[in-house]
Amino acid sequence: MEKICRFISEWMGILVLICAIVSFLCPVITDSISTNWINPLLGFVMFGMGLTLKPEDFKVVFSHPKDIVVGSIAQYTLMPLIAFGLSKALNLPTDLAIGVILVGCCPGGTASNVITYLAKGDIALSVGMTGVSTLLAPILTPLIVLALAGKSINVETAKMFISILQVVVAPILLGFIINHFFPSFTKKATNYLPAFSSITIALIVTIIIGKNSDKLSESGMVTIMVVILHNLLGLLTGFSLGKLLKLNHKKCTAISVEVGMQNSGLASSLANIHFAAYPMATIPGALFSVWHNLSGALVAKLYSSMKDKEFAQEQEKV
Picture (cartoon, rainbow, N blue to C red):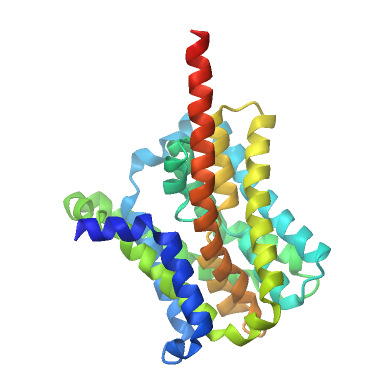
């Protein structure tokens, strides 16, 4: 069973991609599934994330506060501004612009820690950034969405605040508490959690793509292009910022991955709850979930090889 779960989690990107393609070609498979399932499913993923967290994971917040501050500022400035810039530059319709901006304003993605590990980045910094950006999300996400999109649409910040607390923060805290009081249980459960989270994310993507397959057909290429550009520019600017501040390669890698990989499931969830009048707003988040897992695997190999090359050069100097 553990081998099967490991296989599923390792090939998460391909699994999500297959589900997206199947639901797009055969949307009828989602007819009996309500979009109301998106929030509970995302809550399950967040609960699983909480089960993996321990108090020592947040030591980096206090031991290296500068790195966390730099990473968090990058998280909530670079991606929202890139999203806003792409929306304006490509003159996206309101539905898609809302979805892209929501993705940009969300905290770090749940898979970013795994990608940082594979990329040989600073795992402690990655975990710390994910935790801090997630805890800041109830306040910053609604406010930034309001600042960037409030002139063209009605943004109910108070309701978004409550939604993020319910769907993200509460499940994570519940998982964290259970992990603290029942460590033996969670130690066994964490062997299977990545696989179950992967399947859950794939199901969320399936629902969103299937329910909007007809609309996606009309503007699919534009949406895919925007999602890819948003992700790649986030990865690039995150890494460049680290280099500009003269951080080491491991920290640059962690910041790059954290900035570039968003909690796109949350973006789709918020779009589904608060922007139902704009059906296509859920699509960018769903496509981002597909793409950033594929790009994450590629970037992990690139950063890992850069780290190996850097290590080899240091050894030659010795």
